[in-house]
Image (cartoon, rainbow, N blue to C red):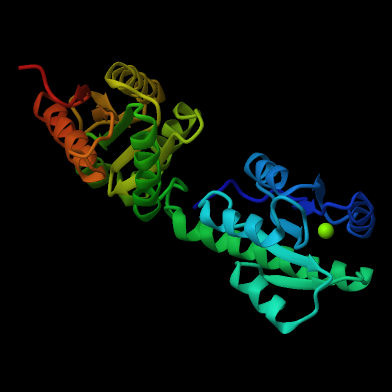
Length: 307
Ligand SMILES: [Mg+2]
């Protein structure tokens, strides 16, 4: 899953049931990032959800919930799975090391802790984490506009779909197509066409600021926006707002009757159940978009159309 860029400094979560050990680790790692602490597994999971640490130093031996269980839970949650986990333990056997790596840890440090070794390992794994964040970002983003690409969108849609299926709250989806874009490219050239798409994408991003609202380039001059917790009325309101924002951009389009760049928008919303799927949602928004085009473009249509 694509999380926000890891800002510098890195975020470190130190988990140990002994406050003395935590103080020692905090001292050793004091200038390597923003540091959070937990003395119990349950609290560590909560902080991980809130703070999205880059790296977690996790004590294996803790009462209630031990380090292996914390690690397994982290790795099962797509939003937490990217954190690098290093186990810290007084066990030194190969079996323990294997168990730690199998639980999803990237490394394993034995007590008593040697400060230079702890620092070196943490530094290595922070560097690797930042590199993998960058790769993930490249893999998930559209090169031209910087918004999510189709692959990332499919993943986000399926995560949100399952979440809305569990909570039985409506999920909205808007599909948007730039009107007469082929004519635009023919008239102004492809470089200006690219610039037009970038400006549209920026406008969509500025208009979609609620948590988990995701903008994606679906293909060519087509974009989709995922709207969590949105019913039909909210999807319509959002669509009309988008159309207005694109009007305000006032990008000249001499090859269009409108004289400026406009968009056609199709939207749908549903409470997921066993009869619907992510494909249904895409098809419904797509069919509403088709109606918006057929009715003359520069407008918003919702699925299903009124009889
Ligand atoms: Mg302990």
